[in-house]
Image 1 (cartoon, rainbow, N blue to C red):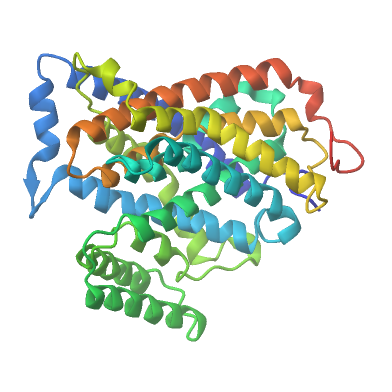
Image 2 (image 1 turned 90 degrees about the horizontal axis):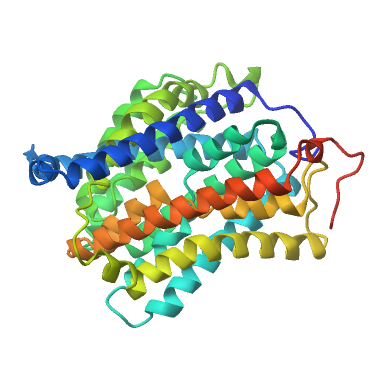
Amino acid sequence: MGFGQRSLSDTFNRFFASEKSSGILLISCTVLSLLMANSSIGATYLSVWQGYVGGLSLEHWINDGLMAIFFLLIGLELERELYSGELAQIKNALLPIFAAIGGIVAPALIHFSINAGTSTQAGVGIPMATDIAFALGVLAILGNRIPASLKVFVVAFAIIDDLGAIVVLAAFYTTQLSVWHLVGAVGVWILLFVLNRLFRVMSLVPYLLGGALMWFLMLQSGVHATIAGVTLAFAIPFSAKDNDEKSPSHKLELFLHKPVAFIILPIFALANTGISVGTDWMYNMTSTNSVGIIAGLILGKPLGVTFLCFVAGASGLCRLPPDLNWRHISGAGILGGIGFTMSIFIANLAFVENTQTTNASKMAILFASLIAGTAGFLWLKLFCKPEDTMDLKEPRQMQ
């Protein structure tokens, strides 16, 4: 069966509920952070995040430490999708895979075409990712206009999007590489993998302790420490039997949903969206880097997602689920332009030595995400009526 032909699982429904609520909280924290940064106590507010604790700034602990837990959750979600979810069968996975590829390549090409050979070329990875929480928040507001399979499609392609962004982080945003620390981290992962596959150790304790050691070694290696989170996920035992209830991976995923949605991501927003809007904000928004980010998210995402899905459908490689049409796919592509969390994360790494460019990038991300969220909402509200969600007898290949 295609992913539009069955009811949503309890796990997915819980995930959807936490993500849509998280989106509302993220918006509130972003607005609060912007107001604080541009108020009379702005300097004090911004200095709080730069205060050092244990040799690292508070912002560093959040971006390298807390966000590793966020990446662990992303990895656990991806593991579930690959083993027992919508990506378990290749015929079901192809549509969101093509959507993700289009949503990664098109924005990157737009940014690169504008910034190639300049000091801001490193920002090419910024418009690649999709923020799941905000995208699902918009879908939740639209209610019964949105078929269940569209929610699953958006989650699937957004997770693959994030996986692509993680690969980009590891490959292109690594500064000085310490090979021995990296070898140590890989060695710990192999040990955990052996505990899982050969000895079937089902307790989470050794995996979490090993994950903490992996994080430290990855931090010292020069590869971004958050990569330890997503790789750890695939060393933790997962079982598709018993509705996943006895699986350590499933238990950890359920445990992490609310802390990540309601604590970690809001703290990340508070720490990373405190942008001082100076008199040169208009100039910064028209720089080639900002234009590349905005065009990549607002234009590149929907064009890439829709075009590659259309090509895949026209070639017969995959078909739309019975309750989806091309208006839904286009709307999902527009919502894909909500970059936010991952885009801000990559912006911090792309211009680590240039605060002004980092802040300008964040302003461009916030602006583009606002436009994409609003446009996606209006598109789906105007062009996707409740009757569009009715099941059809046969999956459609083209429409």
